[in-house]
Structures are given as C-alpha cells and as structure tokens.
Length: 249
Length: 318
Image (cartoon, rainbow over all chains, first blue to last red):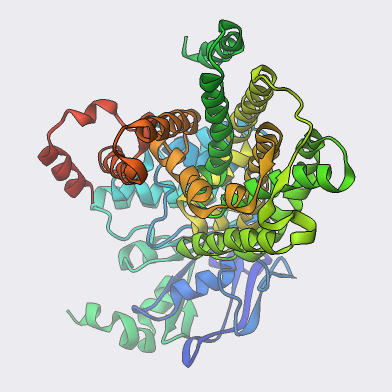
C-alpha cells in the first residue's frame, strides 16, 4: 500500500486543528491527511484527543483554530448532518443505537439520507445488514442486542448512509476474540468491497497494527508521530508515550 | 381483520348519530373525538419525536381565537377559522420552534410550558383584540343539534389519523423516531434534527389549532381560561397520550375515551364535590405505575402479575 500513496489524492485534510475547551487544549495544531481508500489508524493514550478529533471532523465541535477539508472543500463550520450528506459517516465509542427501533429500522433511518422512498431505503438497509452479518437479527429491538452486535450495528448504520469516508471510534473495544476477528473481516471488507476510506480509533494494538496502512499518534492533543505500522512500532517517542508499558511487560 | 379495523370503527361512528342517542352522549362523543385529535397531534411531537411539550394549550387556544376573532372583527363565519388557523398556527409553530427547539429534554418542556402561559396572559390582557376575560361569544350558532358537529369532528379526526399513518410510515416518521431515540446519533446519520423537529412541531401545532378552531365553533363561547389553561389542556393532553400509549396510532384515541368518561363519571359521584380531581389524580397515578407504556403499548395482562415480579423485572432491565 505504501507505494500507492503518492498517486492517490488526499480525500480529507486536517490542517492545524486546535480545539480548546475553556483552558483545556484538547487538540493543538494537529494536521494529517487521509488518502483515498486507505485505512488510517488514530492511536494515543486515554485523553489524547482522538474522539475530540472525530467530533471536529464530524462537525459536533467547530475547531477553535484550523480547518478540515473534504476534497478541498472546507467542512469545519458545517453541521454534522451536512457533513454526513457530503460523505463522512461515523460510529460512536459509546454506542448510540436508536434503542426502541428494530435493527432494520435503525439502518433504514440512516439509509433515508440517500434514498427517496422506503422501498429503496429498505433495500439498501437489507444489503448493509447482510454485509455486516446482522441480517438474522434484523427484527430484534436494538435495545436487546449484545455489545458486539451493537458495535456492528453502528457500522451498519454508518454504511447505510453510503459514505465515502467512515470514522470508526473504537469499534473493537469490549469484544471477545471471535467477535474481534469477525469485526476485522468486516472492516477490511468495507474497503475492498465498497471502496470506502477508513479512519479508525483503536486501543487494541494487534488490530490496529494489522489493518492500518498508516498510523497517526496523538499524545496530550498533539501529533507525535505518523507512519506505517512498522515505523510507529519502532518510533522511540511513541514507545515512550504509549507502547512503552506494553513492550516493557 | 386488523387492517380493516380503522375502517370498521369509522363506519360504526358514521352510523352513531342515526341511533338517536341523547344530546349528552353526543356531546361526550364529540369531546372524545376532539381530544383524540389533540392527542394525536401532541403524539407527533411528544410521542414520535420525543419533544415533550407542556404548552399545547397555546396551539389549541390560538386556533380557537383565530376562529373567534375572525367572527368578532370581520363578521365572517367562525368556520373560516379552520383553514385560516392552518396559516396562523404554522406561523406560531415556526416562532415557538425557533425559540424552544434549540433546547433539549426538560428545558424544552419548561420553555413550552412558559410559552403556553404567556399566550394565556396575553389573551387576557389584549382586551381590545381578544375581548380579555369577557371572552368571545358567537351569537348565531350554526346548528343547535349535535349531528353535524359530530360529523365534522369525525372527519377531522379521520383525516388526522390518516395523515399521521402516512407521515409515520415515511421518511419523516423515521427521522422523528431517530431524533427521539438519540439526537446526536440522528444528527451524525445525516438527519437535520433542527429541520425535522420544526416540521414535527408545525404538524403538531396545526392539527391542535384545527381542533381549537372546531372547539370555538362547537361551544360558541371561549375565554382565555377555557382555551389556554395549563391544567385543563396542556397537562391533560400529555395524560391522554401517556395513558393511551405514546407513539402508538390508537393510544391517543383510547386515552381520550378514558379521560373524558372518567372525568364525567367521577364528577357525577355523590358527596365528593371538588374532591373529584383528587380521585382523578389517584387513578392516573395508578395507571402510570402499572401501565408505564400506556394501555395500547403495554401488555394489559401485566395487571395480573404480582407486584414483586414486575419490580424484579424492572430492576433487571435497568
């Protein structure tokens, strides 16, 4: 993949983004690019600003400084629904299923973004549910789903908006090993079968190292490293900030 | 069978006035239908979109006053209030929506509560325009007997029911429910929450206003304490929907049947006097404890399961 990078255009550009909450600098001058059809990992210790970064890209927070560009168009002042319409979809770390709706209705609700009527929306929803192996659970009220399937429902819902970029916020956290393997397959398939670019936050080192093309490391709101998984694994400042304990053990 | 139930009920209701019922019974049926319309309207906003309003008297009263003021100031039939209130209530809903819909949850409820009261106090004090506490009296009543009033409100109720069925089955309905379940999730899935909440409020407000305009024509007299009250309308409509079942098609109808008849029965009990509202309150509390999802949505037979089982279930589901 690394060889291809030069040819592919930058789909999403984060330029010198700072996000301050009162006196707290959650992000300071963070810049990175997301290239078409790549899987970019975003890692960092707890409180490093990863989810804040997602909230800025997604439009929940307008950045204090800096801008986010999608295909060269500035999106950092837009509302989340407008950004979603432009093709950036996300999942939540703390899953937010539409609890009292069935799994199918959850996905239909988001498929309506691009589909005019219910027949078409349902068609898209069913296709996405098959893709994420949730088809058999489609009539369950989503409140009753176990965590692993809720995480997958988050992905299914995001996919149903037919995005160009999908932001996955800890889609592997709290899953058991079998579910993790299943989830890895789905994430890989999202790129290979659907051609969607993926930005992923993950604490699970094995997962992030195995699926990412490149990794951006945040620490205390600042970017401390960027590179291939191999480079990141050998970067001294990353090891010190983040991987140190794990490698030492 | 279930598919044709609405049609069958409609057909029965069409025949009802021909059965020679007493004026009093007809009056109660008209009240039930009026409350059904208000309940269904509230249900769009409170039940499906999850924006609980304690100020629906504002819409009801505004509809009634639109009708009344057309008669009072322009001398035209108060029935014009029905179409005109659509325009007036859309405007009012947009204003209220602009002010209140930026608030969430309890704050929205409190803001609507305040707005309902503002409308009442305004109507009381703009004596030259609204007649103040003297109210508005229509001298020339359209009909003396109830038959046509019944058919008109039946038509309004049926149209409201059909409209809601269509809306809830469409993209609008999905967006409303998504907003109710999680506003942030809805927003990030590309649903313009502000826009859809405004649409929901407008639909709800306009339908409530039409019920208000009908009420003006039917009763022939209104004053601010009749059409703008917090307790007798804003709170009661919440009760109607909660008892019947929020976010269900038939909940508001069942709820209004219970509310209207319960109110009449309790009021007619001997030796109670003003205490009838106390009993009313106790019965409501019991219904809410045992059927928290309302009669239509909840399992009616849960009444029979012992207290402890229910309590345990609840504890387990928390």
